[in-house]
Image (cartoon, rainbow, N blue to C red; front, top):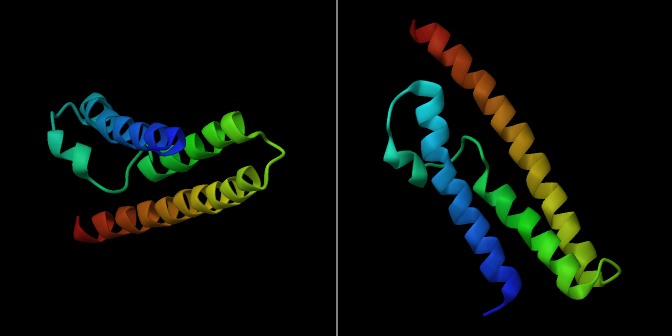
Length: 100
């Protein structure tokens, strides 16, 4: 199996696992289901693509075409994660205010 894929999958799993203690720290509630949740930070798909870029650059070189392609993919993913999460957070706040 590819070193790039293994490292990327490991970073994704670690990002998901870190959500549990972060949630506990912020809310003072132990919620292990956060490990399987989508959304919230840290972003597991961003961790996946950043690790992909770093390991691709390390193994293939930063001058390689595959590094450039992985960088473009990562930038699109990160932009989407920041913008979509930011907007959905704003909508959630408004919905919570409406419900209250």
